[in-house]
Image (cartoon, rainbow, N blue to C red; front, top):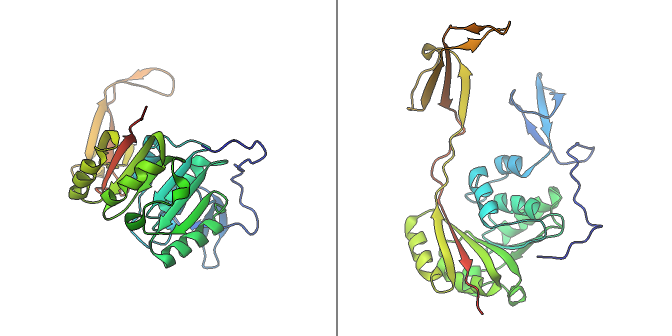
Length: 278
């Protein structure tokens, strides 16, 4: 971890100021500053939090979404002051959340082998005000490994590579003792090969698949909702209190069903901890 500088504080002000980058939403059920559109109606201006940025960024590659990202940040044990290495910058979705997690005095060093992709990500971090927390490099981590300057410095490492097992020997050198690695792979065959390689220098090897199901809950009757995907649940409350505080025997049906935010399989997250050497 990097030493804490008490004079370096991240601003938590969510108020939008003139000249700020904003996210414009047209949906009626979002929150933000309402402004009227020149085409009629109104739109919302929202501060670009990592969660919103993930939804609106340019998809230069496949990205991780909120469910996977929150899981990664937790299991990598990332806190303010951490030094995090990432290989596979891609569209910068995860990088943005990593930067918030290590702020105000940590740093994310992210690498991509594709020069134009790295340049586009660097521009995005400038626009979102994260350039002081994120350094973007161009490097083939699978072929070259992480730079020697990071040996023994990283608290956590994240890999999003086609052949992550090729980078694992380098990860074992850059991680501090007891540091944590996470590797994202879309196919189980990649996971199996990576786990075999991890056994040499890592322990506590675990693989997860994160599935997100969002539900809408409301009072009503079964006829008001069509159960088209098997995601409808109901419960009956036979007794409830009326407005005057007296109990009523009129049945009340509470229903819940999955809504459009449900996300299925995106890939597998494999975590491992570097073995401590005496």
